[in-house]
Length: 335
Image 1 (cartoon, helix red, strand yellow):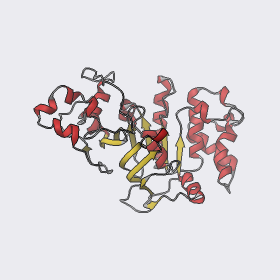
Image 2: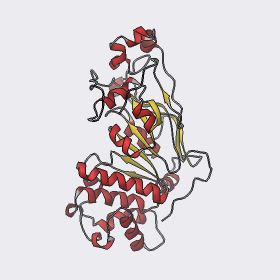
Image 3: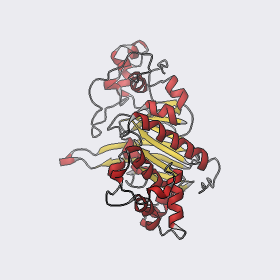
Image 4: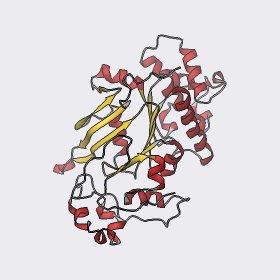
């Protein structure tokens, strides 16, 4: 099993440009702008963590990148080619970009053996080769060895970590170039989480596999990602190399997320209220209604409080450079 190289060097393997996803409002309400202008790129062999609270739009963004949700505006490209939403094109695309869900119990049919669960993708895509050999190799890559020992077992006979490895094997069997992992270890015990993260890193090293890891946990991003993108209310508010962002966070929202980690050297920052309704995104910085820097008077002292409340911020570039969407020149605080 070998990775397919990016056919156009220097071009991100997967990228979104000006991406918007809006859902119709209920009973005449304005549309819900779940993804509201996002640029994001993932390079060949790169792991990017997409981080934010529940409801920030990160799962909708991931689904749009997978072609599961068509964008309202903007576009997605893969290996330099625009994503087409025709059924045949999407089928070919989803062979190259695979989804790994957070709940392996919900991802696996309890009536299917491990063999059938992993072989399902091969059968959907009409795999012309040796099915048994492909399933065995995928299980072995996912750390289930010897693979034949697991062929006839059912999900209820496996541990949580083993079930997640079966889900990963089901993605690997199609030899994808990129996986989108939505909270891949959220349902696992702490002792197993590290094993699955180590597996994802080893797959990157062995296969050149790229990954977008969707998570609410910045600690997970620190352990696995090359780059992190922090999302709030449909927008990326801070992005850059993971070490830079997590050791010197510039956006107050990133600082608040980091402050609640057990290893944080700063007191926890408790954000007031819930994220605003995506049908009524506030003017100015979309975080200003919950911003601890604005509440503490830092924005007033810096002379930017009015801008925070009324001046919109642009869409951050989707490349590897460090960038932050904030009016306040805040000082970094991190791990």
